[in-house]
Length: 151
Image 1: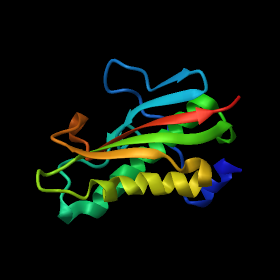
Image 2: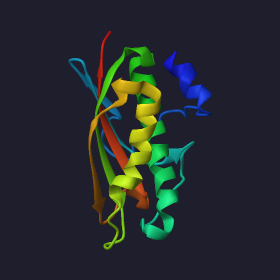
Image 3: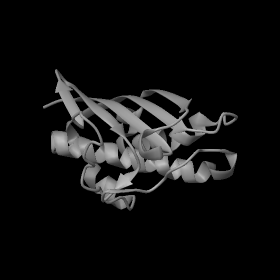
Image 4: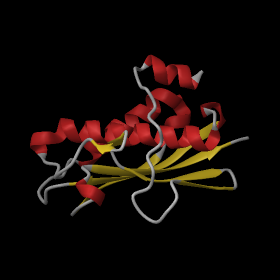
């Protein structure tokens, strides 16, 4: 049912991106799934790069949504079924921003809103949204997640 809902939103899940460093994309411990930071990579290509400012806020929101879609792809790979998701517990959102940019929450809202729309109450999560000096590969955004699941 959740997977059909994702498709009804016009979202096609990509192959989960492979790590750009010496780590694994996800770790299961107990009933928690920790998903490593996802950048806006699709089919091996980084879609959104550079510094975020007021002038490119909408592009940065698209970047954050792409990160969220990659988180979904990692969840699917790890759990095999979205119905196993009990709750999206936490998102940590990082924005590669200009020093005077202060709308980090608006950027990461694009990811949060997608999880709310897909999972309903189970998608309501705690979160941070912070600006950073740079991100891997000059990505606009990076988001990691903690997901509770049941077998």
